[in-house]
Length: 350
Image 1 (cartoon, one colour):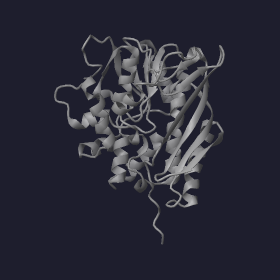
Image 2 (cartoon, helix red, strand yellow):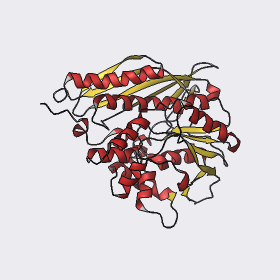
Image 3 (cartoon, helix red, strand yellow):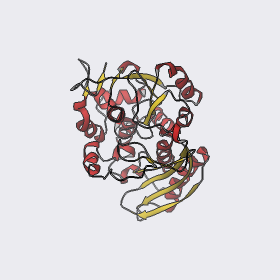
Image 4 (tube, one colour):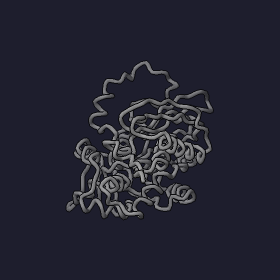
């Protein structure tokens, strides 16, 4: 009997853990010209936001993003579902509603049967169907590692656009999904992940971040992003920089995947976690007595992670109700935005 193909054996990293580190990425885009940009380009590269946004008229702005990566799981259909969900998350993180998607496909044709590739594509198609949008085309190439993702196109009212900048001092921070997906994927590659752990990984990485579109209608939501390859700390630091503020996170309030905690305490982590912390760890103040695995969870790359929302305190209950009504039962307030004194850490854990 032929052994089933394990997709992760073909990739050097998986999911959002294969992103270029934030330190290297900042160097690569440092010379990107920001002058003479059209006024209707509402969002570009200036704050490392989740998507580009271009105003069409007073009522509509088009939101465009692309996201793709190598396998995070071995099952082809599950890989396609996770990659597509992750790509569309950037649309929701801007407060937009998706309109359609294009597939980005790179496959080692000499290693993968066409039937396996077809399953990956079918998985992505199923997510687009769940999101209520067509998969309208795409592009494919023959490469050494399997790569799959989407170009996502959405629309938002310009006045309801949510950026990763614009948070206000005193805002509360709400996280939509629990942390630990990267650790679970590392455990999977080491053959240490239980059936329960795999079910957790698949459950959260295939939940579309649809609350983002509803949150866009709340003027009390001042900033929003999704937590992906740079970990919670990395993406929260982007909000801090873009808003010229600091943030305080309450460790006890963070929703965590239970099996991920067990694995990280036993030394199971992704290589991307260390690269992330090396890039921004100096900007984070950990409490006295903090343990290494706590840093590793904060920097753990989240594939298809949760929305991170900065909103006025009086809107906390309403924001949480939107998450909970959409099935995000572990969404929780995890911290707050604060005025940052000169020289103080951008992010503090208590």
